[in-house]
Structures are given as structure tokens and as C-alpha cells.
Image (cartoon, rainbow, N blue to C red; front, side):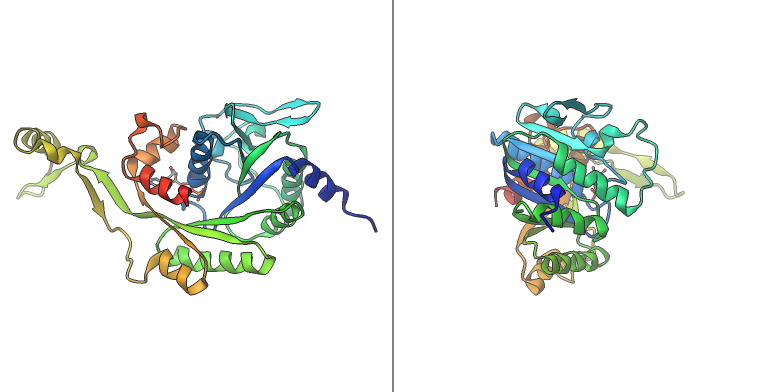
Amino acid sequence: KGPDPDLVAIAERMATVKHKILVLSGKGGVGKSTFSAQLSYALAAKDFQVGLLDIDICGPSIPKMLGLEGQEIHQSNLGWSPVYVESNLGVMSIGFMLPDPDEAVIWRGPRKNGIIKQFLKDVYWGELDFLIVDAPPGTSDEHISIVQFLQATGIDGAIIVTTPQQVSLIDVRKEVSFCKKVGLDVLGVVENMSGLCQPLTDMKFLSTTETGEQRDITAWVMASLKEKAPEMLNLVAFTEVFDSSGGGAEKMCRDMQVPFLGKVPMDPQLCRAAEEGRSCFSDKDKCRVSAPALKKIIDK
Ligand code: ADP
């Protein structure tokens, strides 16, 4: 029996891609797509040629996070063309193929595997320094196929995104052990939503009267601060939201002997940047807390 023609086709396609990184999470909603998007923006800002491939088939959020909603994929004689955010940042997502973004994608395993294979085989990326692959959450059938397909062409490894809660960390342990089983390097674990950061100027101040009525006294607090201590307006408040007595992701990494990359706080400014489809690294967005934290992780 000869070599699998699909694997041969994928290997040919991937021959022009220097580094391939898979972004994984044990659960949905932990910020995996946000991280993939911001990682891609950051690498592109460093003048690398970057491709972002979204294979989170049931919940493709990458088009929205890169401000590409409603865009369509075009065919050329070289294959499917990615949608470009900038000349050095191309994006491919199942989201571009769905006529109605509100429609649920209910596909069984083989069909999902088929589209993933097709993405790897048929997208014309050209020369890339990095291909970032945003995978679905968990360790399902699809993950085994993705890893198989990418391993045939040499993959650098996986970055795993988690939140600090125990419920999420349990799933990350499974994710790490999955990587070990399939022989995929864990490049590191990112702890996202580690506590809540709030610039003082974004906060709302409430006071409760004796009769139990709630009043919004934000305008009064801000006016007083401006008058008496204007330098305080630059402060950012940090709240430890989750119980971190268990040591969070950092301890789990030590236990499982995988690198810990760092923590990104829950930051309303980052959430806004993601909702509006922008990079959190641009000056305009002033993600004062999350952008430096992400930058430190990405520079590693
Ligand atoms: P996943 O890909 O793991 O399902 P998403 O990246 O879609 O998760 O994130 C879920 C939601 O949480 C999104 O609305 C996103 O903007 C928000 N989010 C993710 N990380 C942060 C953060 N550090 N601070 C604030 N909001 C965040």
C-alpha cells in the first residue's frame, strides 16, 4: 500500500510553512480564540508572514475577532484564498463558508474531519513563517485527525489555554496527557482570566442608602478624584476572582512538567477589542493591563 494521498497533498501544501502551532483548550469559553487572534496579530506586527486557521467548527469566532464578518473565501487556480486582515495576516475559517452565522453547525465526525483535511490541503497560504491553528475545545476525534495530519508535515507543538478554576484545570490535565499520548510537544500553558483588572475610569460606583435603594455615585466619585487626587485616575484595580489556593495553572504545569507561559487578567478593554475585531496591541485600544501580559507570553 502506497502513502496516503491526502497526507501527501497536505505535506505539499505545508512545505511553505515554517512553524505550525496548535492552540488548544480543555473547555470552551476560556479565551482560546481570543489568544489565537491576539497571537496572530502580535506575530504579524513583528513583520512575520502569518496564517490563522480556525477549525473550531461548531463555534467559529475568529472572523468576528478579526473584524472579518461577512467575508467570503475565493477560489483561485492555486486553491482557496485566505481572507487578509493585512498583507501579512491571512485568515481561514469555516465561518466564511456559512451562509447564516446564527445557524448551528451540526456535523458528525467524518464530515468535520473532511473539512479539516480540506482546509489543510486546499488553502493556498503561500510562504508563511507561522500557521496558528485554533482547534475546537476538548480532545475529540477531530483533534486526533488534526494532529495526525499536521504531524505528517512536522508541527512545532501546542499552546494550551485555561482559566484558573479547578474545573478548567482538570480538563487541561486531560489535554496535556492527550498531547503526551499523541507525541505532540506542549509549548506551554496560558492562564487566561486570572483575576479581574479594571481601570478606575471604567468602574461604576454604587452606594446603598438606608432604605436599601441603590444609587449610582460614579459622577461624584470621579469629580472628587479629579479635584483632589487626579493621579488616582490612572489606577487599575485588580480583583482575585477565582480561588487560587490550589496554585492554579502554574502549579499544574509544575506537576505535569510542562512550561507555564504566564497569566492574562480578565480585562474589559481586551474584551472590547475582541468584540470589535481589533488587535489589543494598538495604542488606540489602550489594553493597558492585558496587552503587556499577552506580549510577555508571546515574546517567550
Ligand atoms: P474560547 O475560544 O475558549 O471558546 P473565546 O476566545 O471565544 O473563548 O472567549 C470567550 C469570551 O471571553 C469572548 O467574548 C472574549 O472576548 C472574552 N475574553 C477572553 N479572554 C478575555 C480576557 N482576558 N479578558 C476579557 N475578556 C476575555
